Structures are given as C-alpha cells and as structure tokens.
Image 1 (cartoon, rainbow, N blue to C red):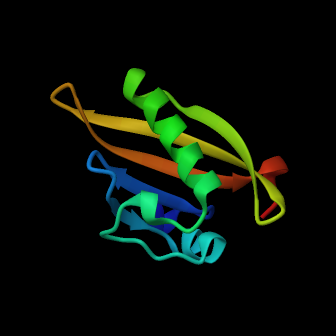
Image 2: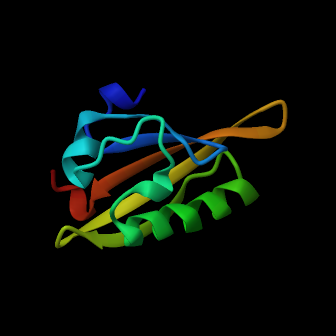
Length: 103
C-alpha cells in the first residue's frame, strides 16, 4: 500500500517498529528506518507528532486522525489510521502530505 502512495507514508507496528515506508518518506526525512523504532528518527518534532497521533488512533481505530507540523521549513498535514484484527490494534498507517496539496 505505501509503495503506491504518492505522498510520504509509513507503517508502524504496535511495538513502535517501522514495518515499511515508501521512497517519498525517505526523501522527506532522510531516514530509512525499516526494522527500527520510529522513536529513533532524527526529528523529535515528528516523533512527538507520531506519538500524539498514535495515542488518538488507539482510542478510536479505523478513523483518520489529523495533525499539522512544519517540517523542513514547509507545512505538512499528518494523518494516521489504526488497523485492528480480532479487536486488537495491529498497525498504523501514517501519511505526511504537504499542506495545501503541494507536492
């Protein structure tokens, strides 16, 4: 799913480990973290944003939660959806889109 996404996207498991991300995510963050915790990203503001959105997504899964963040000098809209199996959250899909639809 993330490989066909045109905006930066990442999938994070319940253990905070990055399962996969696309090339646009690597280009935005300059970080390739498959197999590592998202908390090891070099950008603390993005880590904190992910943490806040993960908390919201845990409370209300299958709902898109949104936040904004200025990153690398540009405004971005960050969205998250939690996916469950058998009533337990399995993973999160997070996208990081330029605000205003700019690419």
